Structure formats: structure tokens, C-alpha cells
Length: 407
Image 1 (spheres, rainbow, N blue to C red):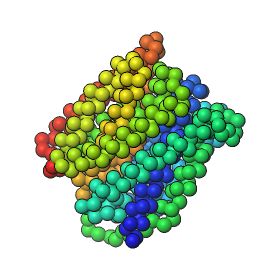
Image 2 (spheres, helix red, strand yellow):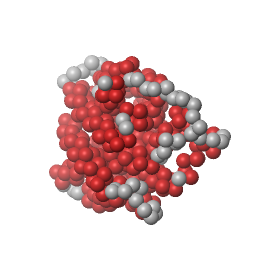
Image 3 (cartoon, one colour):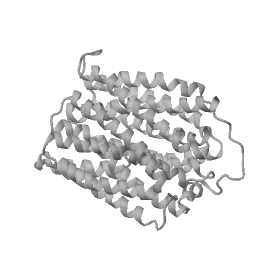
Image 4 (cartoon, one colour):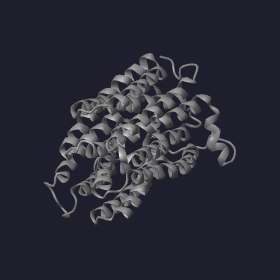
């Protein structure tokens, strides 16, 4: 019963954090860039800055988790920090102060990404090795259901049907999202039971630098993380900037954006289970290569779509590969990490998975800001640039001569 309860609480937390993800991904980004005229480069630099801070701190967290820290304690601290700094972001956004809102958003985004260094490795606690795929899938179901619930919750605020503060409707979506995050995360923070770590001989040896870099002695992990940092950073950058494209290129209403996002989320659920099954059957590396090739084809095709409906179809199809990328990448990391460096490995993995990393947002923002004279074509150039980054990630992945796991 304790294991089943822990699995439920673990999935419920992923459901909870989806509310703030949707509010900031779909509405805050547009409030900053479209409503407040913040240049694209500055918004993307906020994402890159939070990623850079995460890169400097997450390895220390992973080492301490492998040694003696409790994951649930760290999750409690980061959750409180998320609520505090995202709350400040909402306060200044509702006051129409873009600079402090973006500053506190950057800090909140850092703690949001850091929280997964505590959250994701708990899969090792709540499930045996032969059930991790199933439990991981349950977590993604919670995440995607949270995305749908987040869209439904934000809709009346985004459209102005509910107006609490008399300010821009997009900024108002943050308040209910933070409230829902607090409400649904409390069961996990209060009732999750994690066994205490015992001192063992499997702890990493050496000074901090030696411990932090020890995981890269495994060539499989090194190649995978380099590849992952490239292709996942590019994919997340596209996801984070799609609402801005719909606003700037297509002048789409927020209701239409929400419906498109909903369809994409449903496609992500299908992609998660479908490609997760393929990875179990044919091997994670083969399926991951197939996913990256699909992105390399899909991004340029999306970029040249000058018809709105065809563009939307491409976005919905991309949902299949968003879910596929998330599931198969996490499966690959689970197969590569050992008990000795499990948390450290997932700390590096989560730096890349939950943040937009550094390269993608900077390149996207630079392209969009540098080609303003080309009008909306600059967003086409940005999508093509992301395809090139995914291609670079594929090249690294192909450097591995044998599969990460057997099919």
C-alpha cells in the first residue's frame, strides 16, 4: 500500500507542476514579448540564465543525494522557492513591471528546473527495475493530464471572463496556476515516505570536482548527455517559442492557441506510450535515432508552411515526438545510470530536460532579433536553426557504436 500511495503521490506532483508550466509557457511568454514588447532575445536569455545557474549547482545536489540527502526534503525546499519567486513574478506582472517580473521569473524557473533533480530519481524508490517503464509512464500521464487541467483553468482568465485584478488577462493566468500548484503538490510534500539513506561503500570518491566529473568516465553517458543537450535544448526552445510564433506570425487568439496546445498534449500522450513500447521492443538508441530524424524533417517542413491549417497540423504531429522524446530519453538515462551515480546522472539529465539549456534560446533569440528586416520569415530561419542543432545531436548519438540497451 505504501508503494502504491507513493506512486500516486509522485504522479500527482507531476500533475501539480504542470499548472505553472502551462501558465508561463503559454501565457507569460506572450505577456512579456507581445504585450510588453520585450525583445525575443531578452526573454530567451532569461531561460538561458536559469539554465546556466542550474548547470553550476545541480551536480553538487546530485552528489549529496547519492551520499546522504533525502530527495523529498529537497523537493519541499524547491517547491516553496518556486511558489515564492513565481508569486513575485505574478505580482510585478500584474503591476505591469516587465523587468522585475522577468528577473523573478528567471529565479523561479531555476528552482522549477532544480526541483526535478529531487523529483525524477524518486522513481528508483517507488518501483523495482522491471516496473520503472510502467511507473515512468504513469508519471507522464499525470504530467499531461496536468497540462490539460492547466489549460482549462487558465482559459477563463486568459479570455477575460474572470478578471480579478483589472490587468492584462495573460498575466492573471499565473495566479490560479500557482494556487493549483500549491494545492496539488501538498499531498506529495506532506505524505510521501522515502527510506533514509544508509552509509555505504558505493559512495563516489575524491574531491568535489572529481565526483562531479566521474560520471563522464562512462563514454555511453558522456555521448548521450552531449547529444541530449543539443537535441532536447533545441526541441524545448521550439516549444517555448511556439506561442510567440502563433501571436506574431498568425495573430492567433488565446482560445485557439489553447485548443492547439490541447491537441498537441493529447498527441504527446500517444507518442509517449507508443514510442516507449517501441524502445522496449527494438532498443532505445534505434528509436531515439528515429525520433531525431523525424524532428530534422518536421522542423523545416513546419517552417515552410505558409498556410495556417497546415502549420497547425505540423504542430500537432510534433506532439507525438515531444512525448516520444521525453519518454525514450528518460528510459535511456535510466538504462545508463548505475546505483553509484544514479542521482548525479539524473541531475545532469534534468539540467537539460527541464531547462531550455543555453545554446537553443541564445541562437533562437539571436536569429529572430538579427533578421527583423525579414519580417515573419525570421521565425522560419529560427526553426531551421533548431533543425541544425537537432542534426548535431544526432551526429553525436551516432558516434556510439553499439546500442545503449538491447531491444
